[in-house]
Length: 319
Image (tube, rainbow, N blue to C red; front, side, top):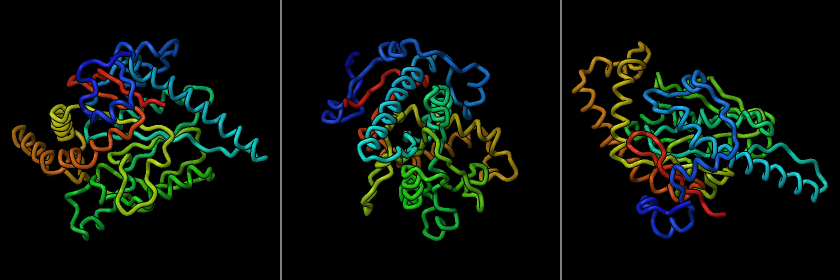
């Protein structure tokens, strides 16, 4: 464990003191004897558009994290049993909830899928569900009526009350909890479709603003998290990754006739880069600086990526 110069540069001094900082090698050593249970074929299926991840990264970063979370989940399950014994009741099955936050294009979705697969391989918690907050965006018709279509992904574009309801029911141990479904192709909520959460052992909640404290609310999304992770990187690198992803989408998803962004498929390389940088400057970069990055210090764990997408430092909140 070290505290290298600059390792906590993204946290204010008061917040940084609440974290233990590990360089990549020191964190990787905490894997201990945790086996690598993913193969290359499985990892390929979990990679997102233009995602950069290999088995070495899984072994060095994800395996120590899965080991830590396995210990935390087991301890929490024991705590529920002890509490039930004290109350003379049967311990309800209450999922352990993990929140994952970070910017657009920082790799949250791929990270969440890999973590889900690894956690599901531990015998004490084989059922791990993944919930993304995209499903809790207001439908486009609502955003258009409110004049905030260009602020999609900003705090005001989410139906926070509905997200809180879903998390409240999940944490209450309800047998089935329905949540809305979002399509990145049509860029909207799909009417009549739901994802159903049925008392899993663990729920991973992934989204841009899951660590925010919203004005006007007396409860927050993060109130329902047992553990939270913020995926961090320098903004210049995230913008570069966003542009790369935009170019990759231009050659794939944007070509779908049903795609909301199909007009972008015809852009030249130069036009596509300019368009992506404009979107970053006016929307995603602004949202990162104003709303997402300020929540970093609220996370239980902060993973910082280098320009090559590899995690170079890990900060774990002190107990």
